[in-house]
Length: 423
Image 1 (cartoon, rainbow, N blue to C red):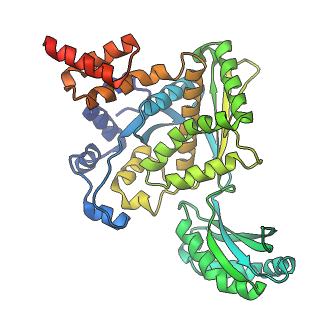
Image 2: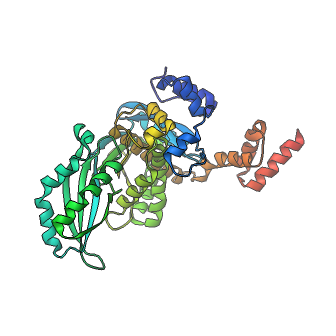
């Protein structure tokens, strides 16, 4: 059994060999291996429990990013994505960070916000103070709705109230702050907010409209940092180029959108693999990137006094290890087993580390040979499959297309036909 994620040539192994290795490390049984490999596919019965009108599944490849060391612990990272180069890029970045300590993470809290919108309040500022005066009563009422969460140390902890001016009359907005612990928390927060509505109407003399969780989880932030030695990055010039690329994302939303998309390539892949809500995480991340009034980079890159590259990031991360898709989808449960994480805080750290690694890999590629070189071979392989090439000649097709630097479907088809005619 390996004790490290540094496995030279992992990408050269056959899929079944990779699975055997991960199964050994993660103590997966034969049934779990069959589930991951597709030999024992998920049933439509499971799908029908997860969504409405289910008719089947759309498979997404599940890969393993290697080389990750997170908070001193070597971790194999499951990533579900359809995009070539993502898993390889994350693994490469993690390899360069491994010898300098890997990724270090921390989390602010596990507090989520529930919003209650109150309309038609005759005296909104007076109503705001009345809500605060009833804070203890409000929190006690909410915690009665989820005694299990309270018993685990969570539950409603505080409130925030604001008067917001809209195009019409002012509205009173109550934020219910709930510690959701190892759950993402949407069900708990929404139940509390909906149950609380009649009490808030009584206090404010207004009419409650919206009562729902906010996906801008700015009290549930995860932070991550890593150091990359200038020698492994490519030298001082590459370090400076990476920092310059980051600086453009700080001031230009057109670049920031693509910069942050690269971060989310890594983050969304782990979120999806573990059965969490990709849309909630993506919405929260992009809203947080625009919190100053201008959309900007989620990450930060700088050089230390030795000239090495230092990356850091702070991002909302409302994920869970219990409830929802993490349990209803057996593949997600296996992904968590492979990760060997037991709390939402641990999972948040892994996800943030993968996002920062992905960001580094993209910036390094852009600052050196360009983004296309890394994509070319993988894209050529996909096109060869689309062209109907047999497995025995795919490698030859890819090598020729990459050598010619001509990775277009029509050229791939020509190469395939030429090879087949020569056999």
